Length: 224
Image (cartoon, rainbow, N blue to C red):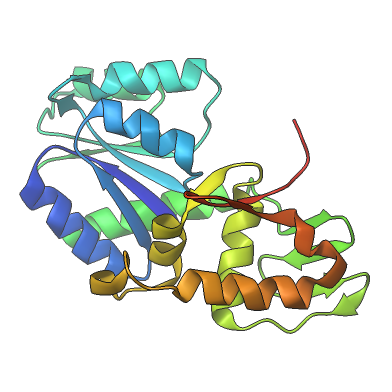
């Protein structure tokens, strides 16, 4: 599960990253709306945690524009504002939940899990393309109706590709998804090794994973 955190308070960012990673989530953090737009273009997220007040604008106004563009990912809005009118404004703008600062870690995790359960009900349990069928719940992979045995890392990469079809993913993003060894994210060739093995196992479907020279990789999916 991938969570994007948008907050300019470095202490809060660090705390949320640590809390959510320890609970098994993959987190991506940005400190302003300009970087948030770039992050949303680069990846598909399961949940967004958004601060109301940011250096380059209002999180609520940003959220309203997201909803106008038919962006449906669940959003948990954080704010030091606690008046009923403020909560109504946030919900009317498209927030799925609202949490006032300061908040307890236990409550935040409970809200996150509840939103992810709700989000999950709208996602397909399985995906199929060119003879490749992947069940995201059971982790069963079939290629031309034959079982395909993947390692945990290979499946995590394939899952990320399937959820971000036709989107260029950098090696850093892919490595961040499968590894917690942050000191080696930039220098490690771990991603290339796993993708090489994954392509070999995919056989005739290996062309779906394309190398984008100097950037990363892209999974060719159905065009919208």
